[in-house]
Amino acid sequence: MAKHTHRIHRSGWLRAAVMGANDGIVSTASLIMGVAAAGMASQQILLTGVAGLVAGAMSMAAGEYVSVSSQADTEKADLDLERRELARDPVYELQEMTNIYIERGLDAELAREVARQLTDFDALGAHARDELGISPTSQPRPAVAALTSAVTFSVGAALPLSLVLFVSAQSLLWVMAIASLVFLAILGALAAHVGGASKMRAALRVTFWSALAMALTSLVGSLFGVDVAG
Image 1: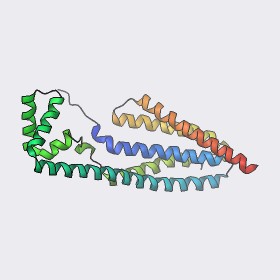
Image 2 (image 1 turned 120 degrees about the vertical axis):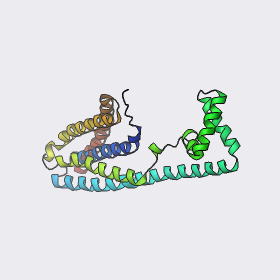
Image 3 (image 1 turned 45 degrees about the vertical axis):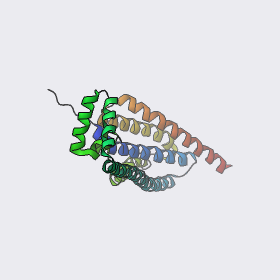
Image 4 (image 1 turned 90 degrees about the vertical axis):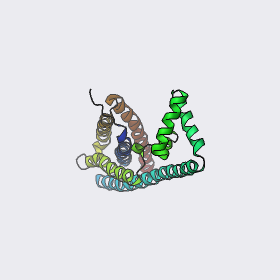
């Protein structure tokens, strides 16, 4: 019998990694395209891009840490509440679990037996999983999410930033746009491969929305450059 490999356990770090790398590419490329459209020199563009990389990485790390910590705090509060309820009224909690399994398709007798055995084995774990939807595979880890986001943002941002070193300011706008979309398509396909999803669909989704973001930023930069010149 063939063994199946599931990928759900990757969802936590994969989400943070993809979001970090995607934001790194999009925000840095958009920033560079905006200032390039405004007529800045290559050295100024490079310094602006480096500043955007550092600020973005720190912002991503802080945002992920706070967000995932809030999720962890909420889950902990729910588990503490459930622990107190199990101690206060175990009969009601057993019936609650029985009803959950009945709603999922088991007959009443089997549902009660399953609820009883799972309660005897690990009551809090059973309620966490089946009543609250809290699973060990998706347990929030703030430090891991923060570090993953910061590192992947930096890696993503370094890709468009490196182009500034090799492309003239006059040609940078279009080279940056095309190269960044290629980077994003590869990122989308790679993330889909790791997660077992459709590579084409993921690549198209990422490139479409990212192209829209970069186009709007470039337009703003261009308008800003016209205003300054005037």
